Length: 131
Image 1 (cartoon, rainbow, N blue to C red):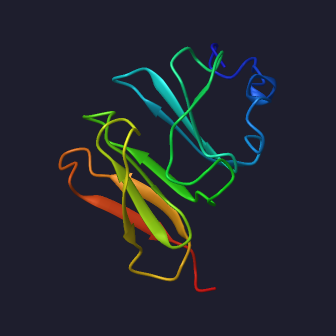
Image 2 (image 1 turned 90 degrees about the vertical axis):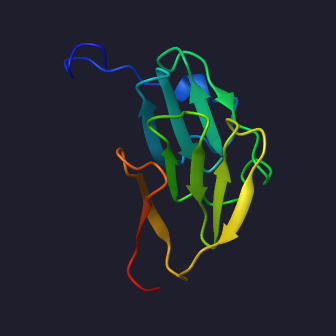
């Protein structure tokens, strides 16, 4: 919406090229870069033009190869991107060109990642109730 919610634009058609993108996981806006980040069954997509066009981030897993449950982008450095699947935490410090991985410290689904705006090295993870 460009008018405070009076009218809405459906972006699904613009994502048809990315099979599985209609299965939503997370949507983030990075104010400093004016970029949308969209996590879905396909993977992670970005848009620098309010959703008119989308580009896929290069991930370690192929498209539709991982269930992405949470996503975060450092508010002070958009090149730092984090996401979590059911067992793995992923981190990129170069805008998604390269990724490092770490096993999650829990068997629960990581439903939320939040980066502390004052201390970006601090990342909070919310998890679902026990399986």
